[in-house]
Image 1 (cartoon, rainbow, N blue to C red):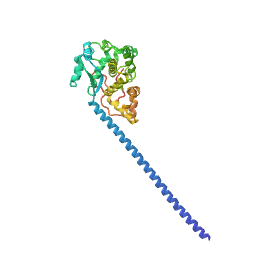
Image 2: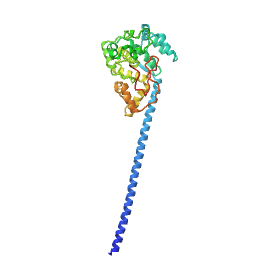
Image 3: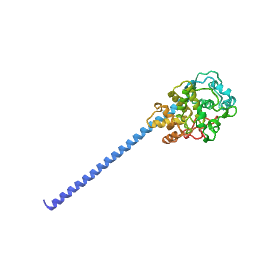
Image 4: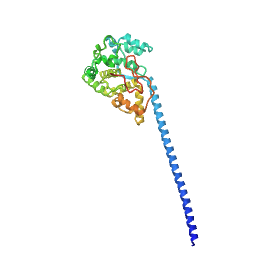
Amino acid sequence: MTIDDQNNEDFSNKKVSSQTNVTDKRNFALSVSIVITALILGFAWIYTVKLKISLQAKNQIETETQLSVEEAIELPLRWDNLGVQMIDAGVINQEAFESIYAQRGGLDSQEKQLLLGKSNGTIKINQQNAGFFLNFLWAFGLSNKNSILENGPMMDPQYGGTENFASTGGWTIANGNIMNHYSAHSFVVLTKEQQELVERVSKNIYRPCCGNSTYFPDCNHGMAMLGLLELLAAQGIDEQTIYKVALEVNKLWFPEQYNVITQYLLNNNKNIENINPREILGINYSSASGYGRILQSVGPQPSKDSVNCSIGGESTAPAQSSGSGCGI
């Protein structure tokens, strides 16, 4: 083989090698493009699926909320003539109470029966009458004699006087000074075991409007819940059922907040219906701090009504509120 032949062969080999490298680079680039495209499509599919699930969960929550307005919870207790007793004792000034509701169209037949009736059957509560029951239970919780009110944190002098709380000073439709009615009437007398049950449960039930448990009922929601616990315990309701009832009532008093909590649980593949009500009512979910943490995770929600702890205020609280305005 001559030198020229050798050079020609080397040139040909280099040419083939160069063409091979170009082909390999093109194949590599094509492979990378395919992988990138597949990743983009994969992420797009995952995002679409997650968005669809999120929208489905949102629609489910909205549907359940709409249904809850019409559906009623039947409370496992009897009211008897408690309304009449509170009016006769001066805890409720009937004229002042009715005038508040006159501005909203007046009391309906069931509410009038509960306020003025001598004998009542079981109680049904829904979103439409939740505010009425909030005020009614507030009056009862405030006035019924109980050691929680007399020996608990409500009496701590560091807060400047028991009469200064929203749950006491805010009840403006009693006859005379409200403190003359504070834990002053034996409408319902609990046994030792029933009182222990109320104290135990009240320390674990929170509300999204403030940071205290029902054992420290410094706002109307807390005082109303205390009244509900007393009535349930007095009528022999077991502890687990009390938690279930308390959660359902809290949902009616704070519908937007519990919608957010429900969404948070769904986002974490949990269903509020499958979780012990005691846990949901605890500090991690239902306190102002617990709810605030959950709200940050879920994101801002459309604001509706505002928290109002006055006698004439609405019973519900807004989704964006972290719970101010219900205590000192």
